[in-house]
Amino acid sequence: MLELLTRLLTDVDGAWAAAIGSLDGLLVDSHATAPGDLNLLVAEHAGLLRAAQSAYNHTLGGGETRELYLRGERLSVYLHPIGSAFFLLIALDARSNLGQARLYGRVAARQLEAHL
Image (cartoon, rainbow, N blue to C red; front, side, top):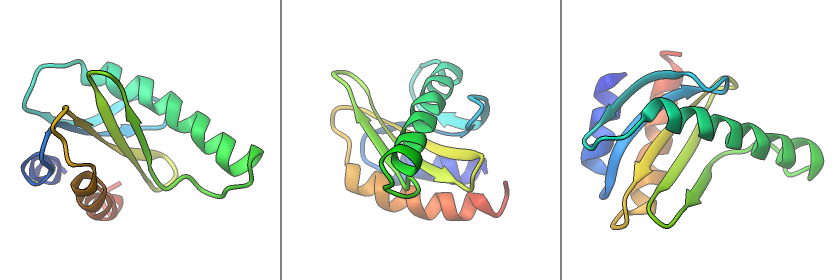
């Protein structure tokens, strides 16, 4: 799994961390090229993803959440669910390429699903 996470940081312009998290908020595995608290990043985004899944699937009738992108002033994060219990998180900087994060993240999530 670490090899896939490492490759994401090479393939996605502006990516500085990639992690696998559980929807319970636990960090499963990660790789980063810059300092940051990935345990906290995964824990907070697990809650956001659970809320989005509940809203889209149950409240709004929009179906399963397939991806989530959040952009802040200094931090952007792309999330892709892996099965029903995990997700892939890619942390991005200001010069990031969201298209690359979506493309390579989707491929990596499919590959990681076989391991989880």
